[in-house]
Length: 215
Image 1: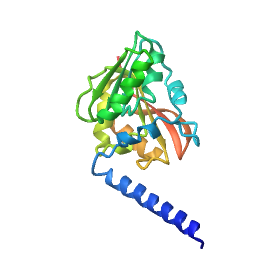
Image 2: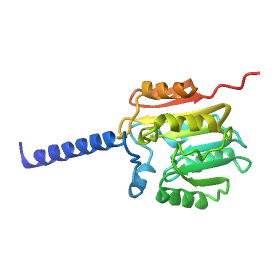
Image 3: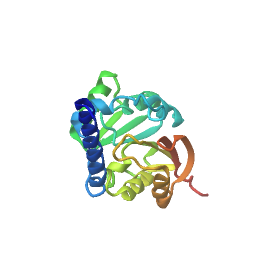
Image 4: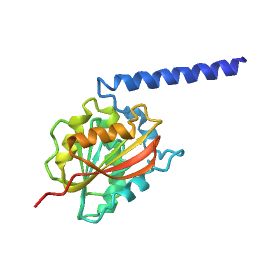
């Protein structure tokens, strides 16, 4: 092999080992995407359609006045289009563990002239969300970053109003990628039912519904 090939193979091997180490470590510790990589998180993946912001928002069947939780909002890639869609009568809660990510999301909302977004620095599972407070919730390549995924999903379940929807998006390029069967197993364990599925096994969004209240 020539030198260029050796360097390329070496770089690919290091990247693969780093990806695996990050994935394994995230099982024991919260390892969200660092704030200095927020520019990368803000980009729509050119290789998949499923995780593009406008596609995720379209699947949510949003209406003016709705209340939406953007869980693990990062730099606000979904926050701004969500806030625009629900309008001034609705509101979005943008929740993230990292202050750097929240500052960027706040900046984007301010530049867009939006004042219907509440920014909350917290981790899912801490009990910071009110019960029956939201009509919709989104988790975009976030679930695998959470060590206690069951507690996080249970908190979202309780925070949704009866009949509310949670959209979970996963892309295989993410070190924390969760397979569809894993997402469904965790979600059904806390009470969700699958409503719709979009995409393929390596890049998908699944809509999960909190059952409507029984009379």
